[in-house]
Each structure stands twice: as C-alpha cells, then as structure tokens.
Length: 167
Image (cartoon, rainbow, N blue to C red):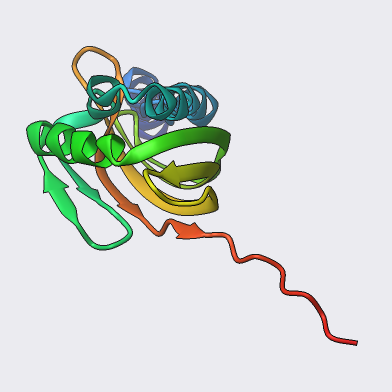
C-alpha cells in the first residue's frame, strides 16, 4: 500500500495558502499626493484673503504649528488666534508657488511631506520682501476622509538680494 501523505500534505498546504488572507494593498501614494496637494493649494489663497478660519481648518484639532522664529501654537484654537495676530500685521501677501518636494507615505492615514513655498510679503509699515519657506508637515487623514496637518515646522526666510559686483 502506497502512502499518500506527501500528496495530501501538498494538497492541504495549497488549500491553506489559497485561503490565507491576502496582505493589504500598499497605500496609493499618487492619490495621497493629490489629496495633500489639494490641501496645500488652499493655504496661499487663504493667506491672501486673510482668512484665518480657512488656515486653521488645514490643521487637526490637536495640531502643533511651529513658526520660523520657534513660536509654537498647539491646538486649532491657538493656531487660529496666532494666525489672526499674524495676518493682522500683514499689509499684503502675494502668492508664489507651493510644492511638495518629498512625500513619505506612512500608512493610508498618515504621511510626511517636505515642501517649499515662495511668496512676497509686505508687513504693515515695511517694504515688500520675497520669501522662501521650506517646511515639513506630518499629515493625518481624519474620519471624514480629509487630510489635515498634525505637526508643521517652518524655516521661512527672506530671499537674499543679489549684491552688486565690484569690478
């Protein structure tokens, strides 16, 4: 009598493998980038309109926002109050570009971006200045499906003016 143990074992393994749960598909980085780009695209128009509520809506309720001078706001209410104080000191804001330079997808609900924005800013009583702002954002996707900033740190600065060269 022949033993069918190897064939049976192979059959059982095949059956178990076929019934095993499939690993989840990796998050769609292209879709996530598109959603984050759409959120970032709201920033400059909100700044230009001095719409502090729209700016604050880009953040989670418990977000941290760190400005270039290390001023730190925690929570959407503080972000809105700090944003109001800032936009009240702005005479004009002219949008430039805002680009995600690097995206790190952590999961389908978390991501990290390294971005750069450019704009012209005139503070009340001052001359216009061109700015560049490299910044990093940690994003979370809410239960409502909207991506919001949970943590942002900025390194904004005035673009240096070219000096006249001496002969």
